Length: 628
Image (cartoon, rainbow, N blue to C red; front, side, top):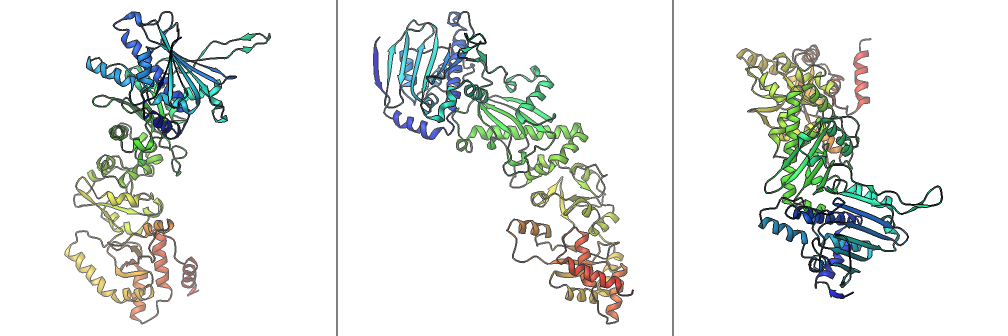
């Protein structure tokens, strides 16, 4: 047997060190690489057999076989693919910088036959075996040739190639595993099975695990039939016409680990300068950990049907983190890392495609099954609203997906912005909204009184994210949004209404000044209101100031201002309490605890906490018992 010892290419030793210690953080990746390379070799043989049928194996199918010798810690991966001769072994395994697959693809492109499904790049990925093996043997025989060759290396500075008989065409790789306990699972059948099912479950060719002989009930050594480890088809790579609704639902259970059916799904295949498949699901219910910091983004990334990673954050923005599914790229390298993904143009293209699919799917559900969409909105609408924060690319699509509770919606119903604008009275120029702590407090807020009187609908925003959303939601369909808790009411008024308001301001000037004096610590200004009809008073925010709710949120995060912004207290000149206060001022009587009572009432009416609950209760008690 002729044996030749050869040195690796000059830079190979450094690259091997990088591969073993840096490139892969998860050492089980080596088996994914070997299976991918085997599938690549099978693809080559299948493709070349189209023009030469003699290249196909007889009596068996194209397949991958794995066996484990636990006692001797030997793992074997064998395929009956195209195989390699001496020159192939030297060029593909002796030089990391070159790739047998790359050369093959280039040859196909040159002959306009680049339509074969290739997996892996035989070169860099192969050397991941030295993360777990102290020695590796590659026995291979190329299709159409008689001589086989054995390539051997310990992954240091050299390798050996020897003539070696091999009956069947293909490649057999034997890994002599390191003695380290960290590698014990790679010499067990259950360990190999779990890795194959994790990374290579959807490889096109059968992957069979051969079992070691075991004693049966009679004490005789018995060998079970090999077990196929990958009997599931890559559903996302099938045509939509070939997949049933039930199959889609069953696969959702696999990728989501959630019970029940999804709201909807989108299956797509993009071709052109880049080719990829995606199958994305929108859950009908909020995933259990969606509100936690350690939430999962839910998309699995595959490359050529080989699993790369769970929870690929670069494929979706955080405001679509509820989406579940699979993305499979034909163009990404198998050894892609999270760092590479962040700046990869292919990922950027896929990301845009997936986002569009999700938003289009949601819009379709909203348009075709409103009840179903409203039920989904209750579950996950607040997360979708996050899309308005630090995002300028998809605002138009998101605006159309928004639903709101309003002063006119029924208890379990919502309205969209399209519907709101369509139902606006002719004299209404803006879209009105009010933010607060909870829907009940908002619905009964005194600030709404003038708008209800005018029959103007007001959006009621009680989700925490609404404060941030409204900074980006400035207009819709040519109508600007107006926070009715800020500034003064700007309705168009008749001359008579204007005269009445001016008269009220004059009549209640002394009342406003007296209240201002007593409430100066908390109130910037006291003024006569034109928005109140039934309530005695309300609090509003200055146009340029941070909202009271935002101040509380910032304070909770430790980022609030040193001092709170002062609010504006508006009083209703037609209310009996305000008239009574006017009489007290005219009689030069003290206002007693009425300022504290009015300010506390205004806070409670908008759903805000009292600054000093005990002081408020004391004031109310005094007023109630004054004439008892």
